[in-house]
Image (cartoon, rainbow, N blue to C red; front, side, top):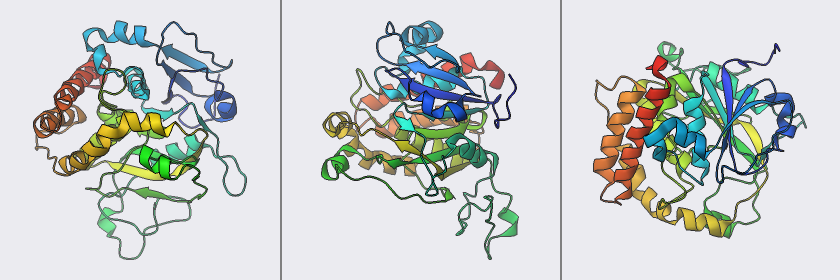
Length: 345
């Protein structure tokens, strides 16, 4: 079946889940032209119900073990971090990933937001990480470079990541959830920004798109969930790794539009149990990433990830022995990516 949807043959949608995917019905108009990769977490014997008419493939833990063999341990279990296995098995250039409690949002005009279409616009236009444009994204319709923006920098840099936002339930940590249980995000800001070079950010994986060929091997969501000392830092860990590598390789990261509607607040007490070590650890992890350096020999994502794993091992092992295991996981992830994507190496 032919489709006029942008990049319909070049983009996969990756969804991690432990439940039936009824939410796809609301996304049908926007998602049906695309191939979907479902990563089933939890009990692999449970049948996940998926609405008819969608083109999809589904992987569970048994599949992960079968495909990756002795490297399967680097994929988290009983945590949404398992989604990154979908990035690895995809054969498309672009990835969009979304959580199963996220629905179509509306603009202030009432128009339904095609999040995927906006992500594609973000990815297909350059970023401006080296010099901030005060009129936001200069490549957006109705915008341009402001007076004083160097002409020699107006070609920008390739965009590797498009980070979308959420209306309704904000992506807060557990302490903030506890003190603001009724807070909702109702502000729709019609803007896309390039995150400046040298600036880290807390990446959220529930509404995220990226160029798999440019940055895919860095999109490792770490070791979270069952058997691990923390959780809910999977996407943020990947974001810190991705950002320092993008900065080194001359790639851009955008944030802002599009919005999705985040429908369900997770339990703050459960979240606190998962997050509490990370709340302390992040005060050391952020300065660590701010000091990460790469050599001139680190010319691609693979070599950058290998270098970064060594720096994680040396720089964070005193924080907790877990980070030595995480460094091993990063290396296993890179090896597994090479194994499944040898044509891209």
